[in-house]
Length: 108
Image 1 (cartoon, rainbow, N blue to C red):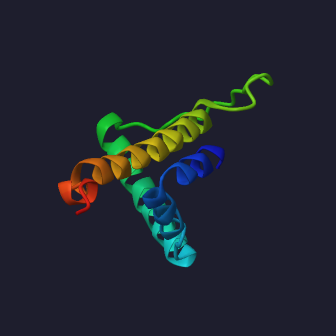
Image 2 (image 1 turned 135 degrees about the horizontal axis):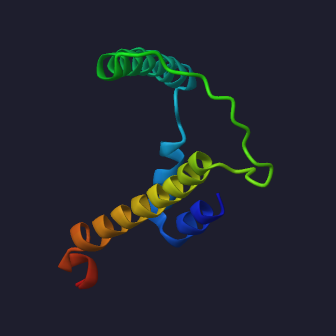
């Protein structure tokens, strides 16, 4: 959120884009995610059974206490930060290279 606020204050086009990105239909998003998760679970189980042909054994392993933030969570956070910076660069490149016509610089 800090980087998003800083980037939004640095560019007017990016600051107009941010509220539009946060206007989601939460109900539709939850339904789509649940349907995708159920389908992915079924397909993954089917493919695992086809490839290995045997049952999976349950493993009861404990995670060490000092690992309070797992790899998955860290990758998700860093990936979202990368997406935020990428969206800023895409918006800036569009403003710089597409919308900057000579008429904008030379007012007669």
